[in-house]
Image 1 (cartoon, rainbow, N blue to C red):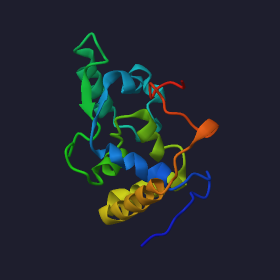
Image 2: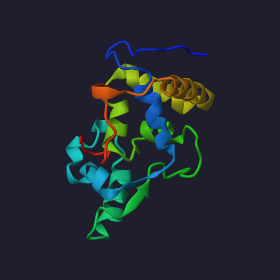
Image 3: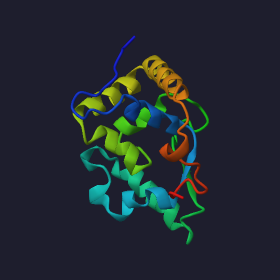
Image 4: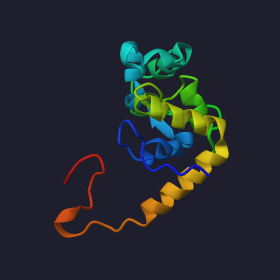
Length: 155
């Protein structure tokens, strides 16, 4: 078992790499990833599969409402919780810009993504451990937190 708690260069927690793995299931609206094809230079660097980006553009340009058209976060195995999300990232096919950046901004983060792409059991174990740690967090109370009426905005 690989015990990692911090990424050395960025001081980020391991969950920075394995929580996004939950994106192996789900969908996203075109409006959340349209920057991938509207500004190709900011699409995630040389690791981006431009054929994939063009397919996203084609999907989203077929409608006038980018808030209703959706794409699977993982186009290969959209209904399976697996490590395909990481395989997609290594192949330059991460749907969300915030996901694809995991392989282009930091070498130590890229190494973790590559290890999850190669070893699904490692991803499952690390994801499980991170979820257990997150589940043990106590709720914020009083002035230390808030229950948001709209998750996208502070009350």
